[in-house]
Amino acid sequence: MTTTPKRILLLGATGSIGTQTLDVLNAHPDEFTLIGISAGHAREKLEEIAAKFSTVQAVGLSALEHDETIAGIPWYGGEDQMVRMVRELDYDLLVNAVVGFRGLAPTLAALERDKDVALANKESLVCGGELVNAALAKTDAVLRPIDSEHSAIWQCLQGNDRNDIRRLIITASGGSLRDLSRDELADITPQRALRHPSWSMGARITIDSATMVNKGFEVIEAHYLFNLPYDQISTVLHAQSIVHSMVEYNDNAIMAQLGSADMRLPIQYALFGPARPYLHEDKPLDMTKTLTLDFKEMDHERFPMLGAAIKAGKRRGNAGCIFNAADEQAVELFLKEKISFLQIEEAILDALESIPFIEHPTLDDLLETDRMTREHVRVRYL
Ligand code: MG
Image (cartoon, rainbow, N blue to C red; front, side, top):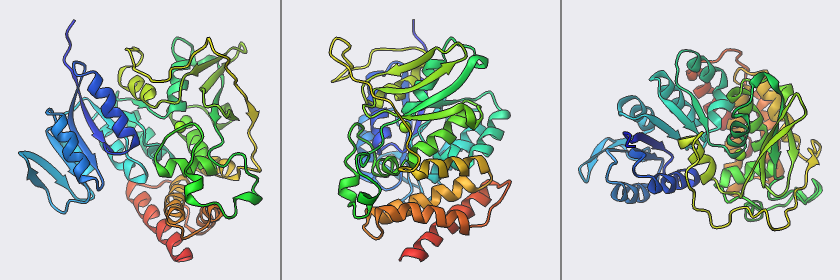
């Protein structure tokens, strides 16, 4: 059977998820055609990708001052390049692998054009969940989660009735500093915090895992993706990162998705699901070997940012946007060794107290909240 390949626009093409998305696309040239790629600064990497995938018709680079034609291909430049590509190009699926708040506007722009979005950008939902929901209500387009926990939940929902869900159980590895007490966190260096025990990920998400901010964001993300109240979304510590998340049903059955810590599976499932084509994996999970699975109750005192993020999510309005902006800015300062690890938490809590709350923000309100919050954090610490 031959079908027309799905046309893919990939934002965040040079990051960790973007690079692994290219791996998956490269393995399935008959099913997918990469038509556009975009990144913030990594010009050379974009040139390499455009040379490798001859189907690429447009490239976006925020760091490029003006639109240009390079090697016969139009390049979109400037901060608005992603939204312009999303609005102007012909594609079937947007893969949003952008890191951070800047990923929200392209998600909204794609939904406004009735385009499906494979979403790795959790900030779209953390910062703009209400706007994304409103956009989804006006279209048949859907979000296809790439985040490994949400992909696992999505897989565990297949063939079951949503009304029978008791709760979602999101697993958390505990991050790179999980064996340290809070007292021991005071003088942690970026190099130490970046050593994640099970996942190889981008810098920001690795730090967000260590603070448990990431898990808080994932609870908010699950709330919007699966349209469930917060009291039906729980978290559990699971050091091995083998069970990627679970769904518990009313008959007490718990469905879990297990696998090695390889993001290409959730990426591939977002592209193909519910189909499951072959995926080459160097270390597939081997059930003939002894497998240890530990689960521990979440420790909210050790990881106060989890509860703080969920609280911001429940507050709605621009609270998630404030939380995220403070975190993005504080993590950047921590990575540059301008602030300590625990000051990331302090910066977030301070911003939530200081930045004005808006109950029903527009996208422009959120852009202003993001700008104002980052500045507030910078002024406080620099
Ligand atoms: Mg995740």
